[in-house]
Image 1 (tube, helix red, strand yellow):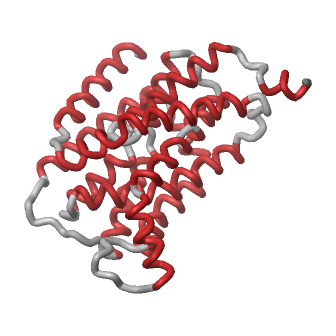
Image 2: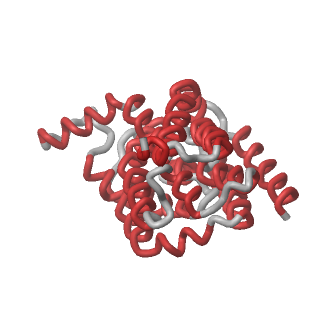
Length: 273
């Protein structure tokens, strides 16, 4: 009975706010608009922005990882089979080694500078990075071409990994930086998006675990239910909208995304200044 009371000794307002954040994460995770930037802005809007909430914002992304694995299971299976068989199958566009190489730059910076990077989550920083991220998407649209590469080589994987480091700045968008990197290197957008989502699996898992370890002193046993609710909300939202979001970013113009990001940046600056 004591454990039961401990687990559920939470203000109902926190449940409502974490459901809102889970919904925001689900709607924005598969779009190049920065789900982290959105959650930080909404957290400030809801006055829900202490150290515990920063951990919640990261951990509820576990829900998106489950959906990514489900949506891209065929691509994952191909990569896993190639790793086991060690064959250079021409039908596979990238291998485990490409994923590891892509993760090296962001892994090094994230590991050694993650505490300093956490200080970049102010509203002004998010607005600035959102504007910069919009510029990269504009460039991506201008660099569109029909002559696109259908495979990723090791140098390209490393360059994409370096460009992805921009996403450590909240508001930039990890997916947006990957699309930008793919456009610069003239890689097929469908391919770079699949690569981006698969790379996100170890990236988000490691980021979430690192955040939990670093902030273990502010987390409580009673936070378990609220984290589960946040993860479930994210999962359900992505199951509903995820495939449509993936189709949109693969085959449609990003102009509406760019316009949305610019409008959001302006409105956020006006509201929070």
